[in-house]
Image (tube, rainbow, N blue to C red):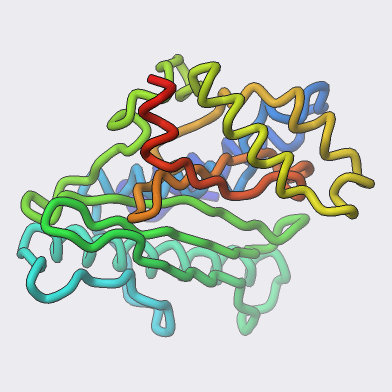
Length: 251
């Protein structure tokens, strides 16, 4: 797969990295990011570079805009850039699907949905859910978030804002007390089918050491944690909302 524009290299790099990871033997399920998670990280990376490329692909949902009273030119520019990158990614997904099927009329799946979590003068945050199938072995999902300062348009990193993680070479790891809180919350959400599939030992052994800037987003109700688990064990994981009062007691 060769990108036709240098601005798309972060996207293709993310897909290649994730695909390579999923081919490796899995001795410990949480060591590898799934293809979907790396794809979303790469997409956010492309946004931060300011790259714009490609022709529009109609039909995609736009990322929501803030209430009119909080709109700024800087934020609108960032949100418009996000939408352009999504159109480019969807177009290339269609191209890859057609190549995989050797049929020019076949299109891939690229379905993105949003939920506004905060819309204030200081923070505009959106939860992002992505479903895609571009011709690989399995459809993929990605769940994450993006957060902006409406005044400057700058993208914010909620993982760093709350000092709940330690920085590592390949990302972040939750501090022990926060890690335990997230683990207990996920365990409490397991249903009978998940328990029968062996999710309890998977979550108990989870080290939560593959977090990135898309793994959390601030909402009115707290800090939403969406851990990018490997595809083969995603079934065991769920979104967790840490209340701000809970976080403060642990820091």
